Length: 169
Image 1 (spheres, rainbow, N blue to C red):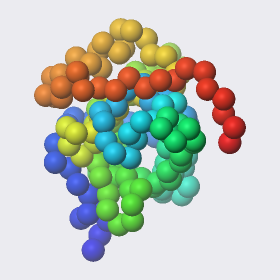
Image 2 (tube, rainbow, N blue to C red; image 1 turned 90 degrees about the horizontal axis):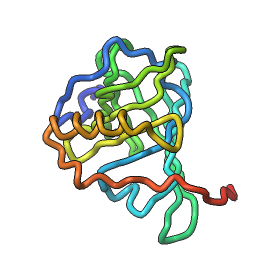
Image 3 (cartoon, rainbow, N blue to C red; image 1 turned 90 degrees about the vertical axis):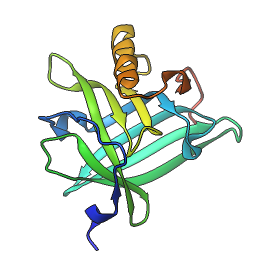
């Protein structure tokens, strides 16, 4: 069975095209997300994207408030329909892949992507990401408006605490 046959996309959205992976690689801060079990009660969440051959390695890291400890999950991602569009399949749990749809990015004058709006395989998963722990208020509002236009209830967004916290890895 091919990997793409296992990819779930229940709610396709338009994705960034043209997309340049090298402008997306690196560290992102999670500014906001919809609630889901694998990040519940987490603050200080970051995602690191690196390239290994044709695979994008994804390392998500966050502080579990209820357990007072850091947690990390490693996954892999591959492009679904070519590397020129922000549509990837991501897996953290074996052969099952979910869609990672990069719906919008803000690009700095130097070309690097600075902020991103990502929708998962359906409207239950959405993330607002930024290269810094604080996002520009106009960008934030623009992403909120786009989520609303997709039928996603923005009142359900969790605004992730990215304030000071001792990192004792």
